[in-house]
Image 1 (cartoon, rainbow, N blue to C red):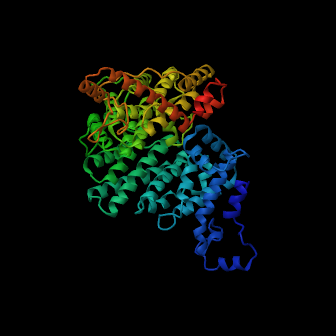
Image 2: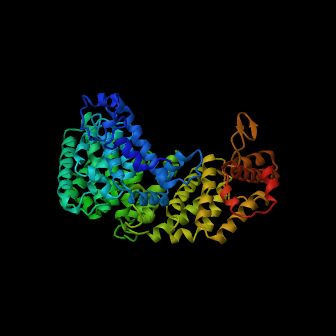
Image 3: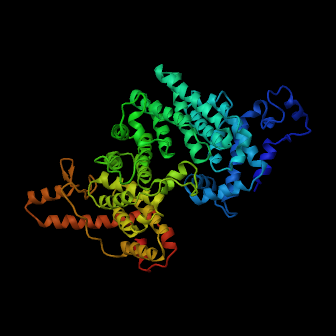
Length: 574
């Protein structure tokens, strides 16, 4: 396996790849870059290979940090998932980079160079290669680009949305790596961005100006939050207040979705960093918002399925106290009620975003999702878990998982999964793991594939979080679901769906689907015993759906870690 630092030096170091060849000498002629540049081996038409070289180095860094010698064929996808979602893997990457020398600095120099090329559009995924790892790297590794942050402004103001988003994050990470005595450059750049964004807004922010305002807002949020999270910079209150006023007035006045989304992101970043104070919201210049109006504004966008607004609403909750009783209802409880209304949204990916936001609103910086979002480890001390809020939320989700309304059951299962995934280490969830297990077991019989898979993966999460005793009980419950009698039917009402559409046709393109239709048919035929027969059939169908979920989505990790009753094998074979 290639050594990362040797590889970086071969690609981007001072020694040319084609040293001493006539081709190498001819390539040096007419170069528009310094011969000591990281691009020296990629002059002319070979520039197209540069982003692939950067991406390959990134991949080798991750492989060296994470993958054991006996890795499988799917290693590339696995390391990408680990980088995004696994805290322990990210800690290993961070520790690995802390041991590196000049090679890591050279890597970031190369990725930065690729990011600023093509008039800010960048070369390939160089921007991603930079931002994915810069947040985990020691500040000294960014030393080569620490004074070049303004070169990213062409990307921040470009017409490429992806380039703007990446450059905004990069500029925040770079400035946060500067020493405390270099705060003046950060303040100066923020003042410039605030001024330009205000001017674009005053001019109507249309066309290319809308793109520039989008980039400016993203950069404003990124620079300030990373200054708090990673740097020792104390920004002047006047700069922060100007930024908050600009963001809030943009949300009130601007109707362009792209611009509003940038304002949502910036607002969420400033709230996460603790730079927005509840008392300041009504005082913001150019805004007539108070806390409740701001929550309503975000909630209205959230009801449209806007994931950016949903995430911002979760981070906005961080600025309010758990026991804030100055208003009735309190802003925090008002935010939670706004989240509960989102169960009607049909897109599963949106519900996972809601689950992430709920983990932030209830567990604050005890939510792994929040730390992963900003590349922070456990050493950062923010607002701790809201015990009352998290306990109340967990109880509600456990109850809603038993409800008969399909959309509510689906959303509650996904939200419960997210809470355990990101907050499973908290005392409040540890105490209720058995109840969470029971809730997921109940969801396995759902006819919705997404709900079934969520329940199956949720059981795996519960298993991973539990102690030895809980794991043994979990396996016993799983075996019972295969080999035992059908569990009692949950409480039903007229709208409870018992059968799939078309499974029991009764003519005229109609079929029996709900408990209400069963009652109607029994009444029409004058045979009350039909109710019991159909309910028995529904119970059997539920049992087999549970078994199907086990087989399709599998819980092999749980079963492989524990000795099981041999009776399970013929049940599985069937």
